[in-house]
Length: 175
Image 1 (spheres, rainbow, N blue to C red):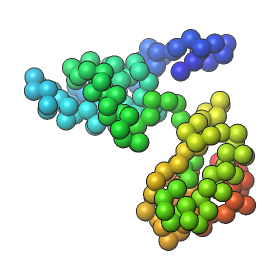
Image 2: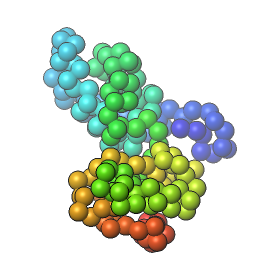
Image 3: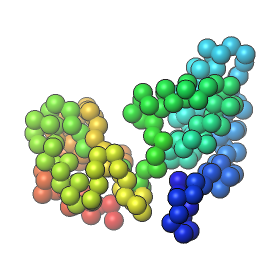
Image 4: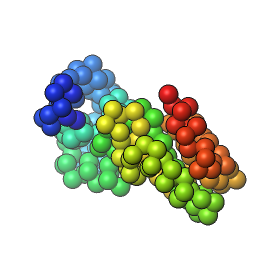
């Protein structure tokens, strides 16, 4: 995360900026039955990463390192999980996460045109967030609502039978 005051690229340590969030993560990890068995420790990793992302909104390097240190795991263990599971992100996400389903049913019914509409309207590419962190645009493989294809999800809200003409209305719903 860059410094928010002057626009410079200096990294801000979220653990220092938000000590209450650090405490919440520590309290979560403290309640785990940690032990010397490293395989068992690895079993706690996904739960800890879920909790950390819930608390901080994403998993910057300093949060990953904190979890790794507390579980006595290598950074490669942490990164392996974060990079494998699409739920986890090490980049800040916008207040409104717009997910365009590109599964087979949605794609056949025009998801690519809908994605292009969002790209154009927001000035973002797939996987990017707006500078003000209002929007994040991404694609997902399937939301399991094929009968509503094409589908767009904004946070937890599902829009079905979406057409390119609906893109601006969906964005307006976020304002």
